[in-house]
Length: 495
Ligand code: AHR
Image 1 (tube, protein in one colour):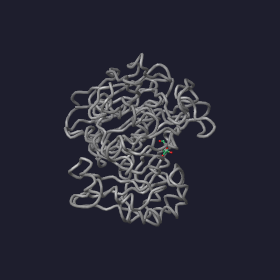
Image 2 (image 1 turned 180 degrees about the horizontal axis):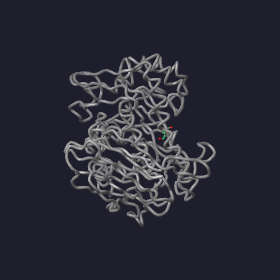
Image 3 (image 1 turned 45 degrees about the vertical axis):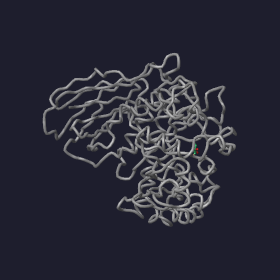
Image 4 (image 1 turned 90 degrees about the vertical axis):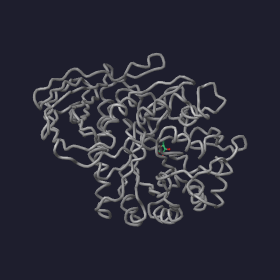
């Protein structure tokens, strides 16, 4: 069977929120420390302590929003320990992640400075699990109050005259687990109480995000929506693509086996069912879709690289991760009426990272390249698309071989992203462009692919997997025929 994609250029389906290309960076392993923060005295080139190379690379992918400080870390983070002179900041134990000493050198001021450098919107996650209402309330006052108040005065004493703009604020993280092991009824009450004191000062309007469900915990979503929907702007959802078993062995990031490839694709595609079902529950209480589904943790989770600290969640990143990213984006686009933000876990050196570092060295991962290729979809108009895909079969199980999404940018270019999940066969795809106002003009393409299922970049071979020009396509009137190699992600631009 052939693969056919019809792009209805005259049927617009709203805007693809750029925030679904968001990121998550936690005080975990070498994400914040080494990945971003090296300190002013470091030999690694930096600006006010923040390394220059990782920031420059990330600016190139237009990060729209960055979530911090956790994750599980958020519910044991006490923000007051992370402001004021660095030498006198309190040291603590990062109990969730490796039991290492956290010196609090990267705190609120440093995070806001990082966001300014990246030109990204900050998304701060507050502490419900081990914090107080007062502590959360004062953090928001510290960051955003414009005028005289105890916290605003303290911010000024610590060197920041003007308040920061802060839009996104999460009221706790995974409160069903590391954020307090709560029942949804209990967390719903706490959410109602804590969020009351998360104030919008002046013209700083806070978008409040309630801690949402784990994977398919639909009861959590039901209870939160029933008990507190009118008090939230967003409700989160966490889902990780884990080929194995979370506790017994997740699988190796560098596994070259076809079974592991297939199951990873299958589990990545599963997020479509999760979004659909959680959305259906949200629709019951919010049929207007005012409340955003905020998928503020997603990505692959494998066993840590052998020889590394198990608490640091450091894993390699292959062409398989690139496919997982492409599939997630397509699914997020399909649900753009409900999914207002998504944050991949995590930006540097942790889980499905964009960047890996080794001291002063840095490499870009296949996942980074997908973010770079797909940035044309950010805030673009989604176009209606119809996909007929051949089956991709392994051991009697079937998945669609091809996944696709199309959007129109402000200049009127049409961008079509494509994934060929099939690990052994090229896919020929006929793309019919319907409803065009003008004839097809210039067509160009970029391709990310590899011959090995575990192809990846290393510090010795940093450009093993990187985008190249896609040349295997023909154009005839309004029909493009594309040959997409096995295991590939592509972007076609039609001018
Ligand atoms: O991203 C790693 C961890 O995964 C986060 O800290 C937590 O929220 C989730 O369980």
